[in-house]
Picture 1 (cartoon, helix red, strand yellow):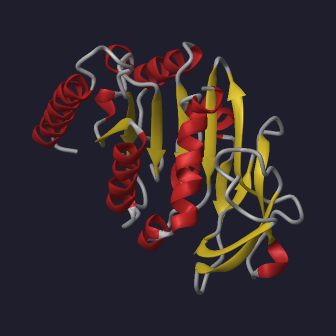
Picture 2: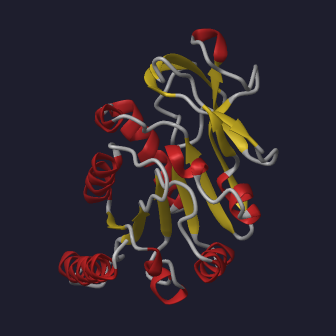
Length: 256
């Protein structure tokens, strides 16, 4: 990214943050609870998904409707200890490849160790393959996906039904998306959805094929969902509710 574009992105985040704080003050004139701030990080150094902007728009909409404020950045310099103090949750929205330097990685680790939350959507698992800590946080890495076509119908088994991200679903959930095969799966995650490889062609994980999961890790919370390759995903009511449930769990709203 060119220096001017980096500066412009940083200024946009700062302006959005100032506006968000102003809006929060207006919405809470009597000192009621200030809405949590959520940062969507969508920098890509590899494949760039066309659904990123649609996804960010949907996340902002979910925030407006549910009392949290979503800001977006593609500038890695915004992942620093001072800026992260403003946020309760950072969402990696289809990030790809090596998006943070070593100092930014240390600051993000400190954010999680201090009780911050992480959420990964789709290609978040196609990110930072050499950062072992991140691999455990996100829960696994992208290995491959079906080809010709890579977007296809498939069925998922709902394994945990009392989580905010799955409580609205039945025993199974069928939808169309680009399905990932994973490697280096963290055995400590709690699997919410398991992809039924008998329902489509191209799966390589076998009977144990998690596609959405959550866990507590190194002082913070982490939630991941493999959906979100297509723009249409972010218009699906069930998928939007799935995302919202993940966000609310990360924000610890389920304890309120």
